[in-house]
Every structure is written in structure tokens, then in C-alpha cells.
Image 1 (cartoon, rainbow, N blue to C red):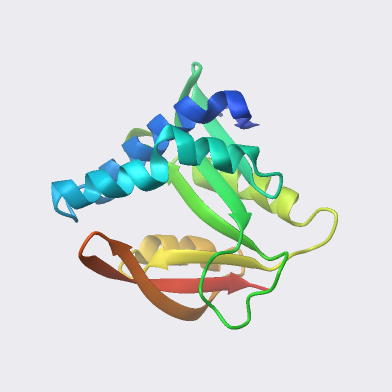
Image 2 (image 1 turned 30 degrees about the vertical axis):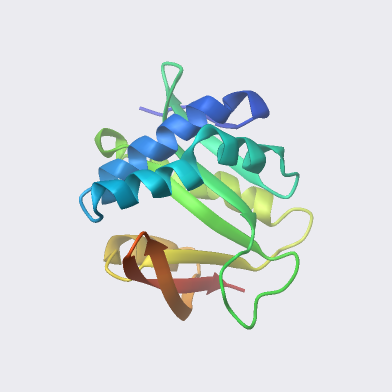
Length: 170
């Protein structure tokens, strides 16, 4: 079944926050102490930060919907990954998440295709992606799109530090 994908607007801040919190918790909820996880979710995925992202003209977010409910999304914007080769105008794929019942149906690839069409217009830009070092499936997914490991950094949630690989598609 092909689910619709559309660009998010400022009116989607609450729905974006809900899917961001749901997918991050589903994926990593058991990885951190509850108080650290909640503080991270509040700081990064509550409505206010989502609204700021949606209001930034350098950012773009796509929503995957099923019967009007958001079940996945891709968020991109100015690169914030710590790498010496990063330049002004580079774009970071910040988040690509799909709820578990919708995974494996090609939805992530469709979100990625929509993003890449935007990324390369009007000119091809360098793409950066941070991916957890232990998420081999995501690393393989991004490699299919020409992303290669270019570095690493610590991804911090509370007192936890996870090794994150920095991938780049020139």
C-alpha cells in the first residue's frame, strides 16, 4: 500500500512533535534512564522546537500519513554535525523515523527520495547524516544513497554518550 507523503507546514507542529516523540521512544526508549529520556524529548521534540524547525526556511520536513495520521517523517535542515569539512549551505538529514508497524514497506526510501529531490534543487548540496554506530541497518540504508563515513562524535542524552557516525554524501 502506497501511503501519501507531503511537506509539513507550520500547522503540523503538534503532529510532528507527537510522531517525533513516539518514534524516538519506540526506537531508543529503553536506552536511557527515564528522566534523561524525558528531558531530551522535551528539549528536542516538544512542540516548540518542532515549530522552530518548521518556521526555518532552510529546513524541510516530510510526513508519511495513513488515513490522516502521521506514521513517519523525515526532517532536514542546516548541517549541525561537528566536522571540519562542513560548509555553510550543507544540509543535514536530522531524522528519518517510521513507526514499527510501517517499517519494511519502502516508506523510508520514499521519504528519502522526496528529500533528495529537494536537496539537489536548484543545485546539488553536500548531505550530512549522523547515525548511531550500532545501527547497521541505517548505515546500509544511507550507503545505498552514496553516504560514506566521514567521522564520529558523541551523541549525548543526559549522562549517556553514544558513539555516532558522521556520514556524508558529497
